[in-house]
Amino acid sequence: MKILHAANELVNKGNGIVNSAVDLACMQSEAGHDVSFVSSGGGYLDLLSEFNIHHEYANMYIRSGWPFFRTLPRLREIIRSRKPDIVHAHMMTGAVLMRLGRDLAGFGDYGLITTVHNEWRLTSNLMQAGDRVIVLSESGRRAFHKRGFRYDKMHVVRHGILQSPRRRAEVHAREVRPPGRRPPVIITVAGLYRRKGVGDLISAFGDIANEFPDATLQILGSGPDRDYFEALKAQANGSDRIHFQGFIAKPYQALREASVFVLASHTEAFPLAVAEAREAGCAVIATAVGGIPELLDHGRAGILIPPHNPAFLAQELRRVLRDPVELERWRRAARTNLDWLSCKRMADETIGVYRSLLQPS
Image (tube, rainbow, N blue to C red; front, top):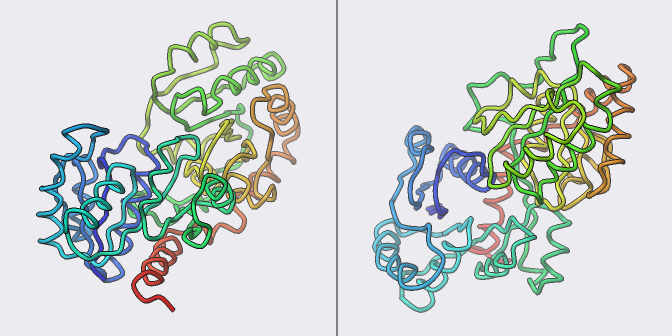
């Protein structure tokens, strides 16, 4: 099968959309498909080359107006050169351009697949441009159906992270952390946006800081709201033990050394950081929003809490940090039933969606 993926960029900066698209393309190429990628470029180009994926440059980082339509001739050139059976658009710009190009500008005859990620963005409605729409969870499927997406057009394909082509050089989490008493480390990996609930986590840590004087909070990620979170940190108890580490491209080692991973998001689709925390063997506490309950096997692999509730989060942190047996129970639970989070499963299911379009029953 000839497949062309489209994304705004291929920059390695923790964007889950980019990361999953790169993993998917690499796995498809490894399985013998003819895979290419169109984007504005970025740090993943060397990896794509290793997997024999052809990359085409086009200005995909545009939102509206004349620059949007100026990209169409370049995309027509790419389509006529690559002759894909499937175009898979991972972001709004590619979805709209590839639909306009096919239906109005005569690019060619290809099936258009879109993957829709962010329920909180109104522009996600534009991903209906796809002939088939991939959503990341059953929760997402229900949410987008309420927003007007045809139910029979949507297919659930959950992200995979195990055996990720981007991370094969890393040691896998099933190598259990060496035993021994260590000061508790609470960690989150999240973009520094208010919707990620980082402020709730800082507040919860402040509530328990005096009870656990050797505990630290490590915040991995970057984003526009860092100054806001720094101000919250300054007002919190134990502020000297709250550390902003910035973006870390390979957080595996930091996760492996942590006691508890927390994701306090107010809204989510299917965050890879939770899967990475499970793989690394952290006890996981996360909000019951979007696809997170499915990621945590509906509470069997991690503790689910309500969003916007720092007091509840503090209560659960107290519970696991006070009791080493409880903490170890949740660490073991996180590492149980991980096989379904493989990249191969994600790639196989995605090819199944393509075939449902090209060879309808």
